[in-house]
Structure formats: C-alpha cells, structure tokens
Image 1 (spheres, chains in turn blue, cyan):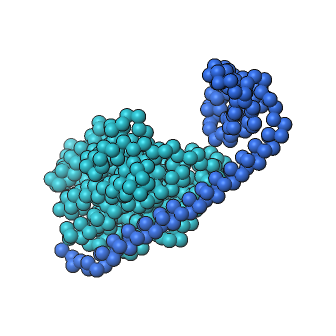
Image 2 (cartoon, rainbow over the protein chains, first blue to last red):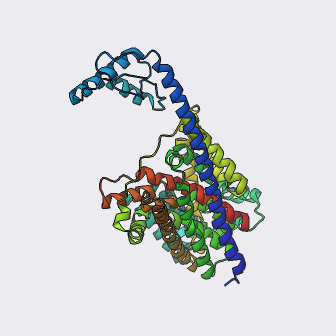
Image 3 (tube, rainbow over the protein chains, first blue to last red):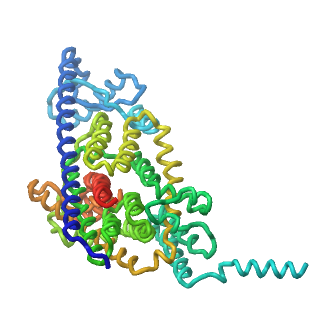
Amino acid sequence: MPTVDWNEAWGTVLTGIIIVFVALILLVLIVMAFGAISSAATKKAEEAHAAKAAAPAPAAPAPAAPAPQVTMAAGEDMDEIAAVITAALAAILAEEGDGKSYVVKSIRRVRSSGSAWRNAGLAENIRSC
Amino acid sequence: MFEVFVQSVQGLIADSGFVHVQWQQLVMIGIACVLAYLAIAKGFEPLLLLPIAFGMLLTNIPNSGLFHMDLFIGNDIDYGAVLHEGGLLDILYMGVKLGVYPPLIFLGIGTMTDFGPLIANPKSFLLGAAAQLGIFFAFIGALLLGFTPEEASSIGIIGGADGPTAILVTKTLAPHLLGSIAVAAYSYMALVPVIQPPIMKALTTSKERAVKMEQLRPISRTEKIIFPIMVTLVVSFLVPDATSLVGMLMLGNLMKESGVVDRLVKTAQNELMNIITIFLGVTVGATASYDYFLTGKTLGIIVMGLLAFCVGTAGGVLFGKLMYIFSGGKVNPLIGSAGVSAVPMAARVSQKVGSETDPTNFLLMHAMGPNVAGVIGSAVAAGVLLAIYA
C-alpha cells in the first residue's frame, strides 16, 4: 500500500472544491450581469418600438385587444395576419362581454429559430384561423 | 499431402485460442457478454456500453494481438512501435491516449446541448458545483483503500458522471485502470434512475419536493451566442487543463446557436459523434484485459464509483435545500441532484421524483440548468486534478 501524503490529499480536495465553486460563481455573476444588460436593452428597444407604433395607432375594426407580441410566420402578409389576429382577439373578448374597448398598439415579429417544418406548420395554423 | 494436412491442422491447433486460453480470459469474456446483455436487453447506455463490451471481448481472445496495453504504459510511449507492432485496437487507442476522442465527443455534445435553462437561471451553476463533491469524497475514499493519488483522482472523477471526462483523466493519470473506470462510470450513469431517487427522497420533505418553480425567462439569441464564448474564456483562463473539454463543448454549442453552420452541426451531432463513439467504446473496452481488470482494485473502483455518485447526488440535493431556504421556498431541492451531469438522465430523474409528489409539477427544464452546469463543473474538477497530478 503506498504511503499517502494526507497533507497533499486534503490540499487537493480543498483546491478542487474552491476552484470549482470559484469558476462557477464567476460564471453566475457574469451570466447574471449579461442577462440584466440584455433585458434592459430588450426593454428599451420594446419601449421605443411601442412608442413609434403608438403614433399612428390604428383603431381596431371591432373592440380590439392588446397584443404586444405576436409570432409571425415567415412569408405571411403582415396586414392580413394583423387583421386575423385582431379579429380573433376581438371575438374572444366580445364573448367575455366586459364592455371595454381595446386598441392594438403594436404587432411585433418575433424571430423564429425553428425549422422549416415548424414554420410551415405555424403558417398552416394561421391560415386555418 | 496428408502429412501436410496434418501438420497444418496441428499448427492451427497449436496457435488456436483453445490451447492458450486462461480461465481469467473466459471470465472476462463472460463479463463482456453480461455487459452486452445489459446494453442490448436492458438499454443501459447502449451507445457506449455495447462497443465497450465487445472491445472487452476482443481483447481477451487469446493470441488475437488486437491490443497490447504494455505499449501504452509509462511516460515515454513509442508511438512508432505502436504503429509497426500494434494491432487494430492499438492504433485506434492512440486517439484515447493522445486525448483526441473525449474532446471530440464533447464537441458533439455541445451541438446537442441547450444552455438556455442555465442562462435563464444562472444560480443553477451552484448546484452543478455542489454535485461535484462526490468526486473529492471518492478521492479521499480511494486513498484510504490504498490507491495512489493519481488512481484516486481517476476513480473520483467517476462521480462527475461524465464518461469522456473520466476517460480523459484516467488515460492521463492511471491508464491501467481505464477499462474498470470506464465500465464503472458508464454503468452507474445508466443506473442513475435507480441510484438517485432514494437519496433524493431521503434528504427532502414532501413539502420541498412539491415546490413549483417560476417559469424561466425567455433567452435572446445574443445571450445564447455569447454564453459559450464567455464560458470558454472564464474556465480556460482559470483552469487551462480543462480547455480541451470545455473548449470543444462550447465550440459545438456556438456552432449550434449561431445558426450559420448547420452542415457542421449535423456532422458533429451525427457522423463525427458516432464514429468517435465507436472508436472510443471499443478501445476503452479493449483496455479491460484480464490481467488489468480482474484485480482487487476493480472492486475498489466499483465501490468508490458508487459512493462518488451517491455523495454527488446528496451534495446537489443538500445545496438545493440551502437554496430553498434562502430563496424563501422558491427552489425545489430535487433539481440539485441533476448537477451530477449524466445529461439528460439526471434531469429526467428530478422531473420523475417531483411528479411523484405532485403530477402537475414540471421540473424538467429547471433541472436542465444544474444538469448542464454539472458538465462544466466536472470538466473544471478534472482540470484541477490534471493540473495537480499530471
């Protein structure tokens, strides 16, 4: 049986645990900081976009609904899809019968990283609405 | 003519395995068949366990000359001799010995890993770190059993639940134990659904297990692209020995998230990964020749490997309990056990145990954060051990 240098062994354990935690805590801090920056940038961009879109503020054909983010399928006609979404929301809210009126402030395209099959499926669903 | 025939048959018999076989080789062939059965019939990590089992079978066939472990022992390996005198598996094994295969496997894993849950909840990194406690616990345990520090490091890394990492550390520090450690590592990874739940249930209350966690925030593409670059820089600057593993893992992930090299991603995910898996499995199995495998050390490796898994799981769950307390009950401690890596099996176990308490509780995505953090954590731990003992 080899003689064990316990001083070195416990030193290895201590070093290992500390380095693993230090490395991952560093990553936690960096990811959190980057997440905060990214969220702030996104929020700012959304606010600017919303302000820009609010200027013409087209009234909905029926009691319209708030639709801050809508996923759009690639290749679809924006106006046509906006009309479909607005009509669908209006129908739903009319059923609820709360008597309020709504305005569509903005419809924003969310970048899709899905496959061509997913996009095709999405387009198919929108057409069938 | 008859004389020639008789002489030829006598020569064949004299060279045949039936004459030269030793009982230990038959035992090893039996073990190889059991492992192959577990891979085929029980589905235990079949992608690696099946080639490992067959490599083990091949290397224990008498006079096959496929693999010579002696060529790879020592600090001055004569690779010219390996090429001239070695068998098929000797030549393929150079990819293990030179540390080529494990990082390439990590490249493929990177193209298949979604770090989104980890980016959305970066505190998950801490659970990935806590679950590495098993590595260092088993390291001390192995030293107590009489292993050298290099061997103990290789045994401890089984607790990282990461096959390529275990292979990379062992081929460097204790190549004579590679077969035993790889078999133990992959067997325990396959047994994660059996090993972890009792520990998770023993360390948590039903109230803790029922905690429903908040939905994770959506992650932007920019964050996903910057993450692999950032992790590579931080980890590699801190622990340069972990660069080959973490660098390749993150390269694969960057290729995937960038979305501009789909062809490369598909190759890394499929053809490259599959080819390397075959080479890695069969050559690692080949190191399990009877003279290196059938020793008391293998028993010690199996015991310590299990201990490493158990302590790693307990470390993750206990740290999860700490997070539960400090977050005011917002973190389900069950996700901590996923920090032992074994992607995505350990995360599925967290989901399963959580849903046993409350079927409407979906922990899978929350557990994926610690799960992928565990991959990074075990690579860092491996880097530390290599830096100290290599």
